[in-house]
Amino acid sequence: MANGVFHTVYGIEINLTLPDLGHPDRPGLLEEVTTPIDRRERELLECLEHHRDGACQAEEDGRSPWMTIRRRTVGGRTVWVAAHLPVRHTPTAEESAKHKAMKERIARVAEHHGLHAEVEARATDGRIRTDVLVTGDNGRRIGWEAQYSPISADTVRRRSRAAAEHGIVPLWVTDSDRSAVVERAPWARVDDFGWKEIASPLALVVRAGVRHLEQWKCLPSSARPCPDNGSSCGRFHAEWFLPALCLPAKPPTEVDRLVVDSAGGEFVPMRIPSQRDVRAVSRMWVPTADRDRWHDMFGPDMDEVSPAEPETGDAEITYSHQELDATCRYGEETFTFNDPRPRRGNSAGTGLHTFDDVPNRLFTIPRQVRRLTTTEDQRRAAAAEHGCEPWDIGPCAGCGAPINRYGDAGVHACEACRARVARR
Image 1: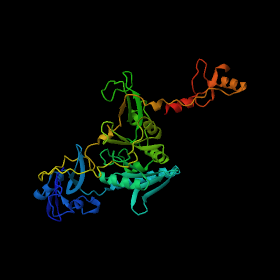
Image 2: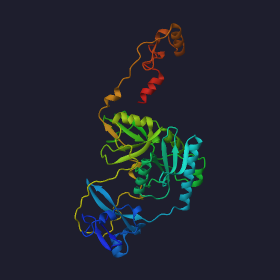
Image 3: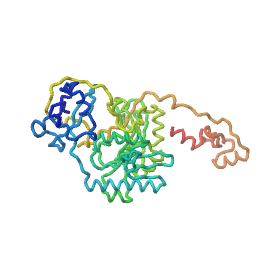
Image 4: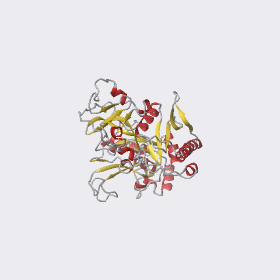
């Protein structure tokens, strides 16, 4: 990114590597140029190369010559950088039609299942907060955002935080793996259908953004190869997979189901920091039972309630005192607006965690029922039901129900109790 910009009002060149920006006579200059774009003139700051030469690399790639200033942390140092704003995008007729169809579908599905849905929901201050606000019976509020046109990462963060401040869980749905919503807030990606297909009863499968937890001991006999060395390592792995990649494969989640289950709490958003780099996070919607299993193993993420990708915030700025460089550095910029390539999170953001030992708390043994309290008639009836002798009947270790506990096909607990333990 560029280390300087041109101020079109004052007619001055600004050096972002200097504490005073190269203008000690203007003490309020930094606050002015770092004001968010929605609160200042869009054409206040200009690319230096474009100002000097009339053109720059960014324009050749469809960007505007106008700039914004933001923080960027590299190698532990936070600096000011200048980045090109995109050319203002007016949604096409197709994008607008798809946006409208998705909003109507979400509201229709919610109301069909007895949920309350409000299109273009507004907060008390009158500003639009979400495309469709779906409220579940438990009062859980999901703010759906149907995003079919390009959007900036800053806008995704700002709108997600605004929703969270009003007690709304944001859920962005897009049909592009290049969208800035991917991995920056709770999200889901669907196929690129036209508005007629979206409005129809056709199933809309969530292709990315919903995952399921898989855990395994990494042995040569394991069904999965080691994610670290491709063979086996003898350690334990926990990783989040798309439904089709689970073993066995799980049925895909459809948008209609996500509308209902997110409002009901059956699906919840997760923020999974990388085990190797806590600054890298994966975001996904997961079944509540999988979230609980993850928390049992690793504990809750203290930042999990954060609705959007964390920023550098008030990190101290490092000033390197470099010479002003007027060369346009477009192409060296990181993901900010819709990117020409899919984001890493679509394939590699699986939240892989590897550990040596199973946490002791997972071995907690529930209190077991040791005595069967039945009459002789009840014992004979249970034996007839389970196909065993009356003396083979004993108590389920979990609930105490009479089961075939001591016969040739005897088990320690009934099917319901064993299933409950297996889900922990």
